Length: 383
Image (cartoon, rainbow, N blue to C red; front, top):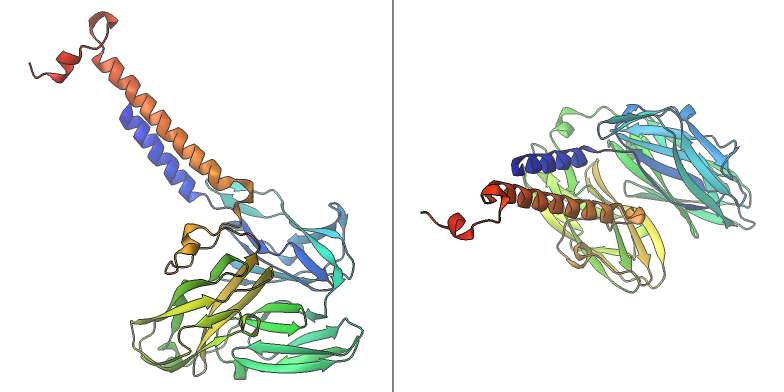
């Protein structure tokens, strides 16, 4: 009986670990006229297409919001221009199939969000880019006065001045950016900022293929209390066949004044080696949700680590956030439903079941003849 109980427990652990559902990363509030963005990940049997992405107002009224989407590896990046109205909206993924553990599901996936009472400084489109050549971003000033919009990608910065209501098309030269796979174009003006995923596929020379490097872990996602600092340790790994020289570490504009790095330049990084980098998060006095990245640049080659940090009043960090040398362990912002507590309770229940089953087995095997009480002397003696 005990062996069966242990096997049952082991089987349940395997099943729980095999569960994979759909995860959607997105903000729940957007300014009017801003760029909606979401990242969707999961085990899709029939992956979503742009026509499967619908938007609704007030739960059931279909609205004419046209999505754009690119797929990078197993992730789907969705973008759309939002209307200049304050409302409650929802994004719905329809007619898709995905696996959740051993089950194949085809139910709709719905995520709620809203637009605030304030208008974005500017709009930008498209909100996702996939290209092998120069690309164009269309900017529009939504405010009544003149505005300056700054851009940054791959360490290259520029600025554009727009009059009230003016529309401007900006061309970005892929050759100047360099050969990479996924980068983020950061656009900022006032309190409006966008991180637009840019996926570029180009032919890379044989020499460049021999050089490669990447960050570990691949992202930072954490929450900190306001007026408190934090620290994370990351590594830059040389994954290529040649040594790397004169590597620069670049902080995106949105995170300048928010993070400091223990090093900014790396003179040499041998093959099959790495270097340790401390990322220090500086205290922020107000609640904020910031996104950006750190870029490593060697010649025309880049590697990126996206960073998302939220500062909250009266936030109590977990143990992993207190440990300054922990690898990146996101604060469990997703467990609003109590899923983690449920799994802990379920685990304790399993322990109780195993103990009770063991006790029952013990009593049945060693109960005295005729169903009488256990003879403890007989049980403990070799006679």
